[in-house]
Length: 248
Image (cartoon, rainbow, N blue to C red; front, side, top):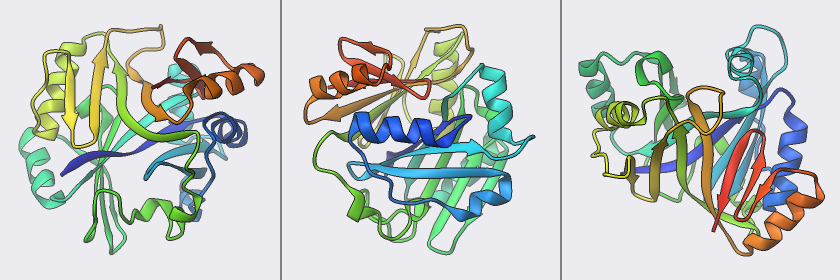
């Protein structure tokens, strides 16, 4: 199993981005992890279907997310988070490739691995295993009561993460090697519930996670709400927190 389970956005201020996500995509907050305070951060988790959007924001100077915001010139996509069922095997694979582990997380029921972005390129990549986890089941980072916050209206699922690069062919190949997955001719890596897509730069902010494809009950309603809040919109997209959400 390898599926897109969570996308993390980084913001200079938490509340404005979370409020826009809630209003436009019609989502609810399910959890705020007190453990991130140790790293000078605050966060919020929002279920989108049975997967998750997370927003993190620095609460002090000198944090890694704060430096990332400065480097890329504003809020944006931060981490692609996948769910697997073979964390030990994958860590052995990373070691053979010389990919360093930036952060290892062991919460008993949850085995998480953040890879060093200098070894992956593009953006931070995290691959986690939930003990006895099913594709749509428990997810430690979202707390124990997240299912109460799942909405049946608005945005109901994520299908693809979109990463821009000066050399998307090379980056797609590197991620395919790390994830032990083939790269399709359209420069995408197929996952059980979607894909990671690689594209030429669409702005001048450098390599990074720039977009997310989502499904919604009423795409037109989402775009209309975004317009009332003064957010950038396209015929089938809205931009929130520096990330373009492509809606179908």
